[in-house]
Image: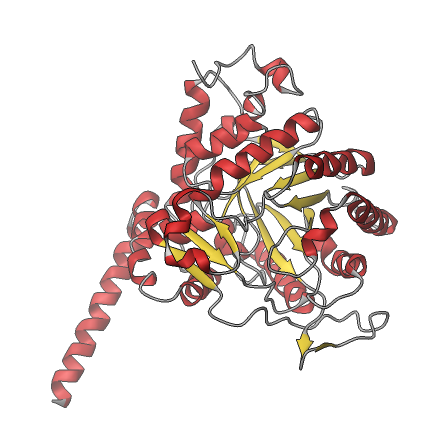
Length: 429
């Protein structure tokens, strides 16, 4: 029996070694396809466990790396920053910045880490001394289970509740990433966003965001003030006109008083919800323009259960819905903000993107950049090069030579689309 076990172990080792050798010598597309083929196995596990495995695989260099240059038509400049392509990974996938190098290696033009929170809740009470205790503590988030799949729709409902290791850990991880880039020039250094959130029990939201900014801003190419997660009580109330204006002024003031390098301070964005009334959207657009924020991310997850979603058992779970059922709603809100801001404010389209056509529709609706999250969890790494390839084809099909030309193309006469409309065909032609 012992000899049999040894033989099986030996055969397993040889097989694993052979598979590894094949993987390492395969072309890039094959490597991505092989990495994505593990998806069905991961989906046999609960969603949070499979997510953790994915993050750890990326952190340990077990994900494929796309070293091919992006086509010129995907290059774009937004917020004064140059993006090799407009496709980004949304916040929440890598909350603790543990796998930045591995995720950037998949071919994203930018990766947004977070969500970050200042303190933790222990025994039902928040550890206080906010003036002195600026060393953040981890936050456990909501009780498990807190993530639920709707596989028939490739959708997810989550109520994570800003679980994270805290700003000190994130700061260490980002510093380690920067050192690894210095040591290994082959590591792709895409643009990095840091998403800031408030603590669940905090009474001073602005202070939480400002502490996050001062601790993590030096590592960020852009910063996000997240006022739209449905899983932190009272957070969405910060989207009200007076509350948002006061918050943005304080955070922006803190940023502008800090010392920055030659490139100046990182751009400051606001991430908003899709569940907004028309007056809400008008107020947010007005505040964004008046306070001089650099952009908006539209949108976060929705608390609604649109269309056929309500038919599935998971729909009764509390939390934010993401994936394809969110696409139409979030894209409509994106288009509204493009019109309300007159195309003067860069927008990042997020919500339900799972194909190049989806990304293209976001861009035509007014997005200068596009983010995804849930589709990567369902389809794996091969999704990223596929979307970029499909987006390139969409641009060429309609006569656009760049992403910038297509931004807001569904709104001729508004913003940058007014000049681009003559260069590309209408979506409906």
